[in-house]
Image (cartoon, rainbow, N blue to C red; front, side, top):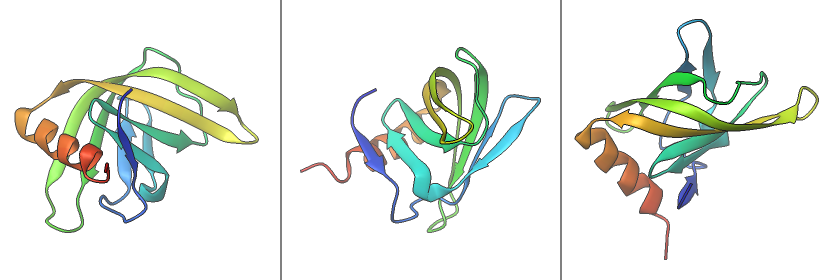
Length: 108
C-alpha cells in the first residue's frame, strides 16, 4: 500500500468491517487510511483473500464511505492482536475522492 494517515483526530467514527458472516467494529484511533485501502487492528484474525465490505462514517459531516475490498495480509497473534491490511476493489468515484483527500492530507 502507499501513503497513509493514522487517524488520531477521529476523522471517522468506528469503522464497520463485515464479510457477510462476521461484523467487526474497528475503533477510529487504530485505523490507517490509504488511498487504495486501510490497515487496522483486530482481536480476531481475518484470512487472506477474504472479501469484506467496509463502512466509514465521518462525524463531521455524516458522509459515508462504503467500499468492497479484500484482505491481503493479516499478521499477529491472539495475544498481541492482528494487523490487517485491506485493499479496496470496488469504490465509487466520490468515495475514492474522499479517501484520497484523507490519505494525502498530512503529507508535507
